[in-house]
Image 1 (tube, chains in turn yellow, red):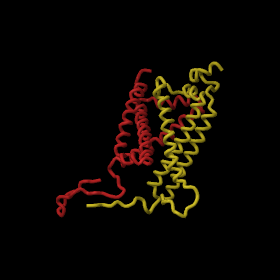
Image 2 (cartoon, chains in turn yellow, brown):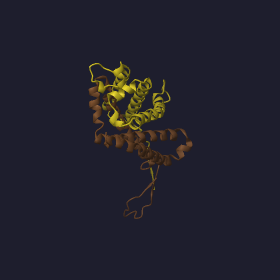
Image 3 (cartoon, each protein chain N blue to C red):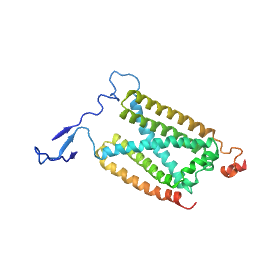
Image 4 (cartoon, chains in turn cyan, blue):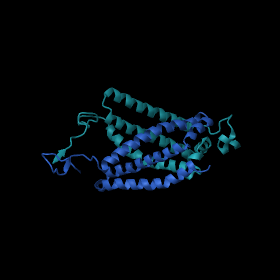
Length: 154
Length: 140
């Protein structure tokens, strides 16, 4: 006996790109972006986890304001984290967009969900980028033991 | 793909059903897809929280330290193993997807590649988990 499976989601979202359509193929660009950013994110996130949780003595127990202050004193880590932030948020948001398009069939609800994903992405990228580059590792009026050791010599 | 059918009076000894078309239900391809989605959704929501908690470095050292202390709780420590496991799976399975899309030879062995992904995840987690759990549960 043979059972033939129908082509999925024929009546719904993701129309195949029609031949008459003009302009850039954004879905294709997104497809390429997921692969390109994914490869870079493997390196950035594995580096992030290995440095913070494995190579730093104490791992998770050692992470505090002083640790971040010391790390962000190095522009390499600032840029590492900012690039990771941008790529991770965009990669994650585009993935969530795909999932919403797959499962949320009510148009109004779908728009709300996509709007929430897009605005979250914008807020997180703006917030994270601003903080990484305006961060002060040695704020005044704070106990010295909470700060990176290099603050004492300033 | 084949699956067993329930015997009926009209068809007491049903054969195996052959399902054709684009279906990959129940096989490695489906589990790769399902786990990729679930791990991706989990990582996405952690990412939202993680950017916000790290943002507290701009508020005050005390605020950041108070929130990051919750990550040092033993229950969170176990959750971090699950999170890193999800990240490692998503990463390795993502590389598998790229290979299967781009390299015809990889497409032909995509089922084997799924098990290769599982094996690599187990090896990487065997490297990560002891160090992390010693940090979480050990003396400090």
